[in-house]
Image (cartoon, rainbow, N blue to C red; front, side, top):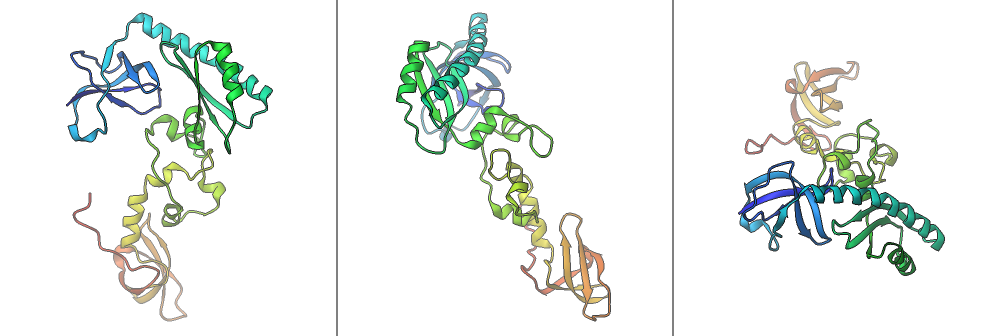
Length: 281
């Protein structure tokens, strides 16, 4: 079916909408109806085809192409959101609630004002909602989010010196496990493999497939291999450079470094190497 892709935040994910007879190009703004209400979003991909079986429910239609008034209203809402943020923070302090305000969003028609917050547990914010509704005279919604979503909304710099991947280009959070850090030979110190959000760094998953392949074809420490100088035991393996430090079976021989291609795995080690899969990408 024919769809267009629309996003509502600069670093947010894109959503499919049914354009109908409208023709919108990348960079245009369109008015659509979402679960939050009427919103103005930027077209990231023009008319294109997608498989019809990939949707759980019917796509929302594009209401119309945004005009200058809609764009000005959207920008005015962004400015008013900053004032709403300050008001809500002061109300949170007044009610002594254990919650951290992260972001505020107006719908385009200002029918709803959404406050995003983080908290370690459940928060009774009924009185806070009443005060905010009396202040802004619109429907108030408080939505609790996770720490990874908080980092995506606020942005910042990672330990690599670059802006957070989640706030720059990642559209969806991929699962990351401690096994990935072990596979890549990284320190298991949480301070070194965790991001600003306190969770494992998303970038651990970027090279995981490459490390799995290299670990599969590289004899691990403790393996018995045949080298040009005879059999030996692998002391260290550098999967990135493809080198092995091998000690000969004669104790008097000093360890020597070989290229991976010069060694033939025989037995032993933590894991026997797997041959590369010719069908894999």
